Every structure is written in structure tokens, then in C-alpha cells.
Image 1 (cartoon, rainbow, N blue to C red):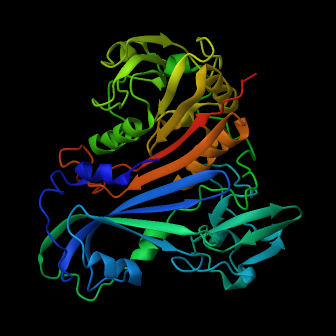
Image 2 (spheres, rainbow, N blue to C red):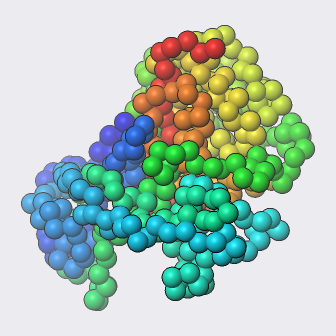
Image 3 (tube, one colour):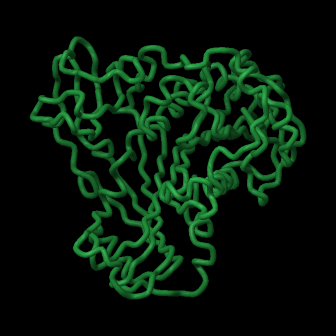
Length: 426
């Protein structure tokens, strides 16, 4: 589990110095963590919201009251039963339509097929129940058998939710100049993704319709990765967030495998490794990695076997690369084999990748559905327990970042982690 309070220095260095109480008429920056569980998985989704105002914006009452007595660096957790933070699940929102009512445009000349457990914009069934052709609110397909079973309920409906708010900064008293604009904090936190990473009623999600592992560039990866790319694939803040994730999940003084590695491992300086081994595609990139003790050049899409003995590592990390695997189930079986019982496997990713080499299904998914896809890899393997998904959005992008003039916020970070079960892996 990630302790979100340890992220505060990444958001606002020195934020916890001194006790500055919240002024109800001042703007406040809050780091929220929404936590919930499904049958086999713990989920945590974090969002930084800047410039909120306790007297102007709408907060869930219990949370808003508690924040009025807090100061910078302090946090409060509020529990919500089903129906309190998001709308309750309603049976009328679950119905069936003829499969012919599903009308999706071609995506890069490819047909979009309805699949069980997947989310699609409501506009794909425009005309049903007066749904407008411009409505992009997600709906979930829960059955495909001559008809489509639809669920329009919020993906978090029916779940007990826990919401933690940490006060990051308080501005000088005075309204922010937003006029009558009012932010519904609950909607801001729960819309646009959280909940979409989980299975529907614990039934496996079908990510396998069509050719999910096909790629635009199906040529051998050795050619594409033959030239070193000594560039950062996410901004500096997002890299530090991944470092915090690894710092909390990877055991100290362990043997660690950096899978599909490059010249940056994103491990924090505070994490001491007994031995760090890299496995990647380019020798020059791997040789430039200052953290690695040794490395192996190996193409997992050509040979899924890992060239290591069983139970060799205490942890395996995979950063910003899972979307390139064309045989992920075979690779996860190998990861389980080389991990010690109780060893941890952590996968991190964002919303940036090399399009020619990413698997087809990846680019067709919502950000949180990508978390669901990676989670499905873990669940289908049967080799891992203690599963946890985690995300963070909304941090400010570094001012000197090359995209700072176009993007105000840092790249989002998503993670899926688990431990290898203690039974032997065959």
C-alpha cells in the first residue's frame, strides 16, 4: 500500500513546516486519495486539486466540516457507504438492447467491437433511452450474446469508499476571482476514471476481442530499439512519483530485476538495493544506467523466457513498458518463476508510449481501463496475491519541462503491484 502523505514533499516542498490553519475564505490545495476494494484487489486513486475554496465549492458535508479545523500538512479520512459519494446503483440503469444498436465509428480503420466488461461512450447506442449522439459518458457492456447487456451505473456504485484529504497549501485570504463558479469536489474526484479498472461483479473483463496484441509495426523489435534513445519518457515530477512508489513497495537491500529497462530505473536514492539487474533491448541505454550492477540484452517479444534461475529476486519492477508485450501471460509466468515467495512485482505506466510498438488494445482503452488490463494479467496468472492498483493525477508540471507551455499538469502515474504467492510455481 502507498502512503499518500509521503507524496506531499513532491507536491509542495516544505508544505509541512509550521502550522498554518485553513481560512474558509482562502484558496486551498488538497491532495485527495480515494480508496476502495473489490473482491481480490485494493484500489487507491489520488488527485491533487488546487485553488479550492471551503466557502465557495461544494464538499461532502463531513469532509468540508473537518477541513475547516485543519492546517497545512494535516489530513482527514472520511468513510462513505454506497450511494453517499456517488449515486447509488439503480436496477433501471441495467438493460438489454439489440446488438445492432451498437454503432461505433472506425478507429484508425479498425472496427470497435463490444466486449464484456469494457467501457464505451454512451453515444455508441445513441437513440436508446434518449441517449444523445454527443454523449461520451462511459457505459459498461456486461453481456454480449445476440444482445448487449448495458450498465449505466457509475463504476464505483455499490462500493464502500474512503476519502482522505491532505492540506497541501493555503493561499492568502480572499476569493480566487472565479465569480460564481462552484466545483463539486465529489464529482471531480470520482468522474473520469476511478472504478473503471475493476472487474464487473468479479467477472473477468474481455480485453481479447479482435487482435489485441497486434501492433502497427510488427517487425522485429531489435531494429526499432537498435539506436539508443537517451530521453525521459515522462516529466521529472512523474518520474519522482514512480520513485516514491518503488521506494515504498520495493524491499530495501533486496535483489531487484528491472524488466524492459533503459537508462533510467526511476528508483529513489533512498532505496538501497543489494543487487540491481537490468533486462532491456539496447546495450548503450543499459550501460548508461547508474543504478545497475549488471544487465542483459534480451527481447521478451522474441523469447519470453527470463535468463535467470528460479527465485532469484526479491522484487521485479517494470517501468513505462508493459504496453509493448505481445505475450504478457507468458512473461508474467516467468516473473513469478524468478521471484522469491512473497517477492513483489510492480508495474508502472503513464499515458505516453511509442505508438508503432504498443499493442493495439492499449491505445483503444481509457487510462483506467489500461490499469484494468494490467490487473487482468495479474489475476489470470494465478501466481500473485495482495493485489493493489494506484494512481496519481493533477500534480503541477515542472516549469522547465518541454511541454510546460501546453500542459499544466504532470504526466499521470498508474501502478499495479502484487506479491508472488508462496506455493511453488510450476
